[in-house]
Image (tube, rainbow, N blue to C red; front, side, top):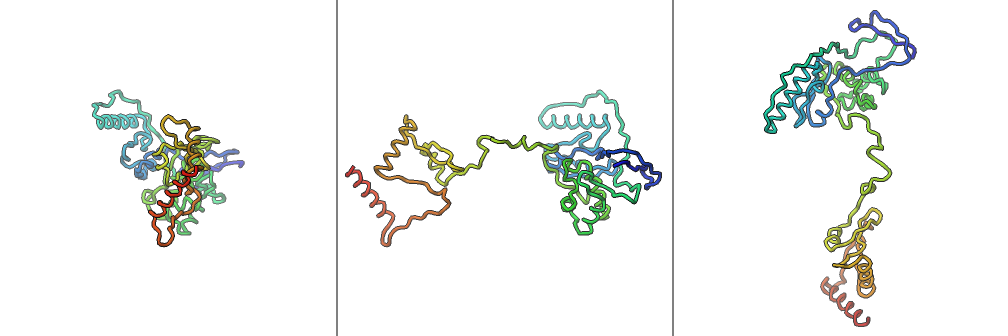
Length: 306
C-alpha cells in the first residue's frame, strides 16, 4: 500500500485526493456495545440517526443506558444511568432520587456514513478489511439466494475475524438491506456470543485441570457401590470400587478380607465397562431359585472342606 484516495462525505466520489501512506486503519464508528443485551435475549432496532443497532427495551434484568444504548452525549448518558439506578433501587425496596448535580454536556458531533460511494471505480469496496470481504462478495451471496444474515455471514466470512464484526457488521447489514430493499431492522443481525473480547485458549484450558482433566464414567452399579461404603478409584475413565471397608477397618484389612472371601467362597465382578450386555440364562426346567439353591449348597460344601 502506497496511498489512500479519499473524498468528502456526500460528494459521490468527486473532489478526491490521494494521501501517501503505508497503513490504513478502520473504525467501526460509534456503535453501542449491545452484546450483553443480546445474550440476555433482548431485541435490537436500527437507529437511523446514529447509524447503529441499539437495544430495544430491557432484557430481563439487563438495562442498557448511555452509550450502551446509543446515547453518546455525556449529560444524557449520566441522566439515563441515574434513572436506571433509581428504578433498580425501587425494585429492591429502596427509595432513591437522581443526583441534582448537572453534568456538563459533551455534545457529540459526527455524521454516520454507511457504505459511502467509492472515490474510484478502479478499486474494490471493502466492507470487512480483516476478512477481505467486499461489497461485491455480499452482492454475490444475495444473487446466490443467501437471504438470511446468518447465511451471508458464513458464506462471505463477514464479521468472523477477531473483531467479531465490530468494524464491519453495520456496513455489511446496510449493503444487504439495500439489496433486499428492506430496512436494516427487518434484515436483522447476527447472533452475539461471548466472549466480547478475544480470550486466549490458555485461560480456559491447560495441561492439567484436576477432576476435569478427563471424562468420568460411572457404571450402572455406581450408586450400589457407594451405598455400601466403597472406596472408589479411577480405572481408565471408569470409577471402580477398590474395597468396601467395614467400621474401624483399614483399607489393607478390607482388601485382605475380601481377597480371602473370593478365594474361599465366591466373588462378584462388575464387567459392564466392557460394553457388552450380560444376561443370566437358566437351564431348561430350572428356575432362578433352583440356581441360587445350588450356589448355596456349593458354598456350604466349600466351607465343609476348608
